Amino acid sequence: MNGKMVRTTVYLPKDFVEAVKLEAMSRKMTLTSMMYEGLKKEIRIEPKRKKRMVFKTYDLGNPKYVFRRADAYE
Image 1 (cartoon, one colour):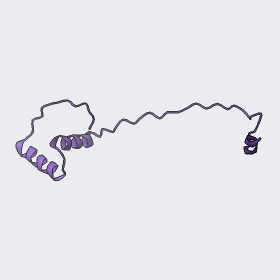
Image 2 (cartoon, helix red, strand yellow):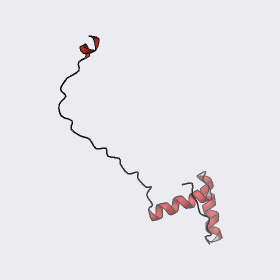
Image 3 (cartoon, helix red, strand yellow):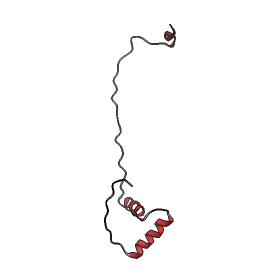
Image 4 (cartoon, helix red, strand yellow):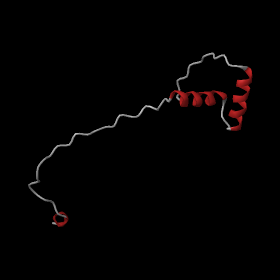
C-alpha cells in the first residue's frame, strides 16, 4: 500500500466482516490490507509504471587517432 491513505466509512454486514477478519488472520494480514487487495483486484488497478528514460546519442564520426594499449607505455 502507498503511504497516503484516506480514512472512510463502509457499511458491511456483520457476518461478512467477521468472515473477512478470520480469512485475514489466517493469511496473516490486517483487515485493511485484505480489503485493499480485494478491491484492487476487482477494479484492476495496476501500479504506475515508471517512464522509460531514453538518452539521445550522436554519431561523432571516426576518430582521427586510434589509441592502442602499447601507446600508453611510450
